[in-house]
Image (cartoon, rainbow, N blue to C red; front, side, top):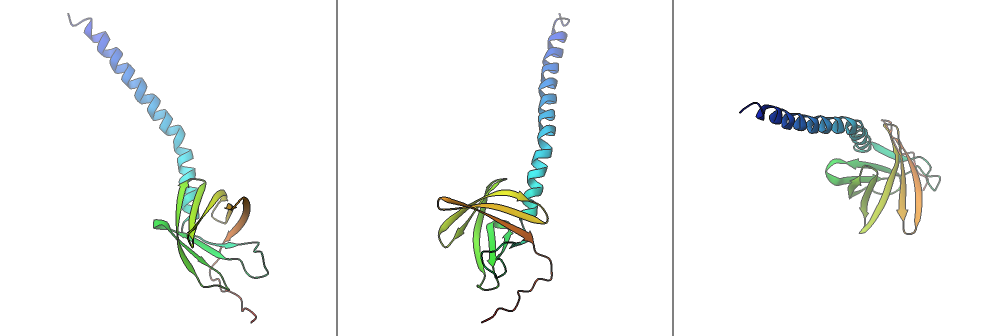
Length: 143
């Protein structure tokens, strides 16, 4: 009587094992992508980014994306501002600038550089930043 049950139990076990193996393979295949996204985010957070091609002859503004949704923006000619920021996906960020939500797409990020495509109204403006090297002191500004 048990003879017919054993093959059926084995079939169920094999089906469960196959589903488990497929699940493990799917996680293994997705892990490099998740790891790359996490590395990109970790390069973004905590790095002082200085705009490399500012619109004027003055040094570019500095942005530091801090954990817990805080963004420090500073420049050599204006006082600093502490803003809130969010990361909607691995490639989409936004921050609040005096009540206006600024959206940006992360085009590239590494330990040394950051390129953002910032949506400003109907325009998309590309800004490039370099990781600041310490020590960094703003040059004397002519008055």
